Length: 174
Length: 277
Image 1: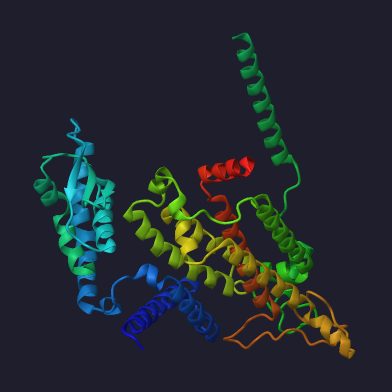
Image 2: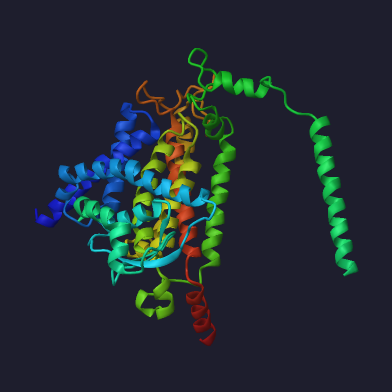
């Protein structure tokens, strides 16, 4: 068995486990029938989408350090980062002078994989105040609509908007 | 100016009259009461009656037992008619024999194929999850709300998303062609029809049989389809019907989406070439 076959098999096994978990959650039951039908369907779906979903070797999928960073990021993002962004936008809305200074800025990114790119982009969009409106994949830029454009300099935008996200995204997906 | 005003006035009057009539009818006309009517009572008492199996359908889901057992013939012809509708769709699009190769497309079309990396990546993940959730809906059709048609409609959203986010060429390259979808659709429908006539085969050996229904009736000697045990309750033929309908409907919708997703410019170019010949 060649290394490519082995790597494909690894991907399929990991994805089958993932899809079977979703099957059990979606159907909310785990009887003998579910195990038989669920595992059969999961393996078929895994074979169909393995090469589409996972381009890296399967060892990356079960790397516990990456999963650890992922959980840490989720905790950090959904508590501290979201809180700060919400408070900032709420303050701007309630302020009698409505201190906004909107505009679209160019933010560079330095990650390689699609998943890391998407993680950063969606993290930017999901925090109030910033929205990714366009991605330039060939030149590696996000175009971000920002509620308060402090500066249009790329380094400052990167520092203020996406540096934290990128730090995590690199450790999770790259 | 006068004419416009007249139309506005008339429309307003018609609207007021229509709304008033609807409200009055809603108040005074017959509305079903909270009590269970005799027909509903029959289904509720019989669809999973383990103590009196004379008219049972072996399905905890009353809707599923109606669809594929009590009024099964109706669903059978319904799904056949849907198949004919798909055939009609394929016939309308018969002009397009093959998908034009990617290289033959103009630069203008090639540039708009597929969306940004964000939409592409998320669509891939969501489409994969839709595939497995749809199977869960189909396999639990006889236990929980859902069933073959719903699952088929759900799974066809996955190729639709992929067509929008990554273009139909992404599917064609992975051999998800309309010919294969038509074959899958046919296999699904044939499975349903074969399951319908299985009891009739037993008539050849002198049994008293029935068609379409799931479980044995008081006057038949054919024992009915196996219902399964507690943890593997498959409700006789209902499980087969649901899974086959799932395949048939999913493939049917996917086929239609593939046909409809041809870029208009490609279609026009094809027609131009056809008329020039």
